[in-house]
Length: 113
Length: 113
Image (cartoon, rainbow over all chains, first blue to last red; front, side):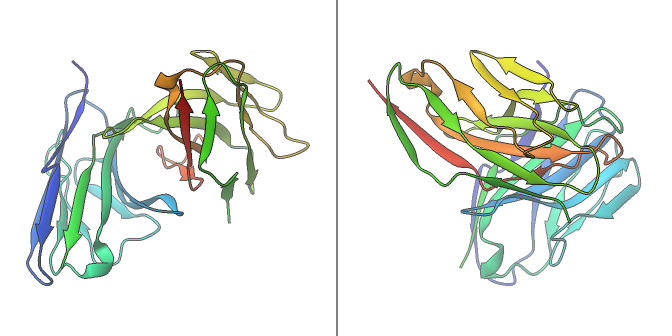
């Protein structure tokens, strides 16, 4: 089954404690990205990757890091989380440069206390 | 910059009622337009799309027409069901944007039996 898998589904942490949210896709997609969803703001792109070892900032990259060492994986790293990073996070993937269809993971609800 | 504005919700309807969710956009170029749906506890799924002016996207009884003159892409369904209860997002993207979507804020739809 074609899918984007994120883990964990829920995460509660404290300010300053480094964390990683994993994302993996099994469709051999070139493009992957991370979004955060906040009430009244819709989804905003954090980072994206066009292929292995190629990443770039989205609209709200501050406080986040990413890496793309393998085509299937695109982890999101918060090295020093703060309460304003409490949000619902989604990973997405698609084929190459096409914007025809994005496949989304089920989301990670993060709470930073 | 580009932006998408959706009608404020939540929207509450009875089963078999007619649905309209308004979406307008501001764009510097000629984007493709999308409606994504998010069911409770799940990631976003593509509902329908239109890639150029006057195109009509349709799926599962939902329709939306790309109106360049009014910069709109309103979502409609003639008879909603309880199973249509979800959050609906309007979005735009460009062919060269590596799948980046600019989302509206989302509209919560609740359908009662």
